[in-house]
Image 1 (cartoon, protein in one colour):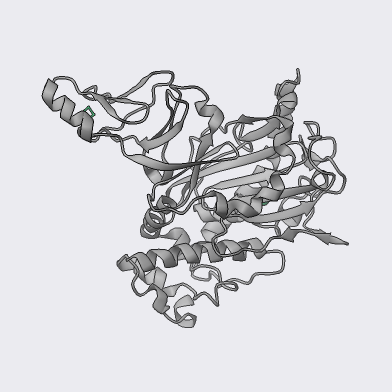
Image 2 (tube, rainbow, N blue to C red; image 1 turned 90 degrees about the horizontal axis):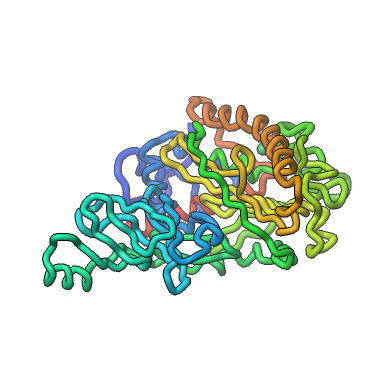
Length: 415
Ligand code: FES
Ligand SMILES: [Fe+2]
């Protein structure tokens, strides 16, 4: 049992929670063990621990909520719920993109988006706000009173940063800037944006997946499983080859990206109706290097975003979690988007047919992952759950573990 082999870690003794969360935090491995030990299974099964993660991890992380294309012109608005908090992202009249809490300053109703409008209007008593969140009207509140309210009331601004056209928000007003934490991803962008990329936003998933969010992203980043789970769909991009295979990157303090790169058996492969293979549905991007045209790079931006750099596209997934076993993933695997493609590819006359081929191939890969994710979640509830053993193909999992431990430890230090 974990309790018998892990001594309580003094780092977590000041954890900000009581009860089961505190018990779990005290069981966590210390920093030196982190490279070798999985997290206690309760981190994946406890509703209280999930609430702790929502508050202390998601609400303090940079979370991608969409693409700039989704708020392309003044008046455009996007609703999102990072860490469960309703927010609005607007394009203001001056062309800026702003994020704000979607919570009315009158009595707290949620304020919806109304695309293409110059104001945001609360549906309950029609208080209105400009696209920067400033109160501009409050019916029947009295002229003097309204003038005073206009000076003091504003939808609470939320930190926002744009990274390669992705809109990230952070609910923590003291958060460090995002871009430096993603510096290690920059080399993988080389040449892509010279191809006049068009963002196709993901369709928001409407059905939760019945596993913990960490199971979901661990499956994404795991270089060990494709050879066994994805036979027939992933063989074209193997983690193990005679002269190499998967390549990992270092994880330095402050890094917020976990990266693995795998070679392809031939250049210019990509997704087709059978998964990864030659003869992909979309043509290669001419502006990237020969080396980039021979590999796939999987980038996880914890806790909620994944990306795949392929020779013909960048695919991305946005994840949100609403419960310990309720994970929403918006991705091209199940829905219809979450891509960056050269404009020339999106303008191909048979674009829809090609996209359908990618979805068909993606669905085959996904169908192979689903039972594994279900099984991993079930295994977390077993009294025989192991402490775990990581092998040489699982560096990204060790890195994710370290990232989580750091986030949990920060929560302890804040208390
Ligand atoms: S709660 Fe928004 S106007 Fe009353
Ligand atoms: Fe997989």
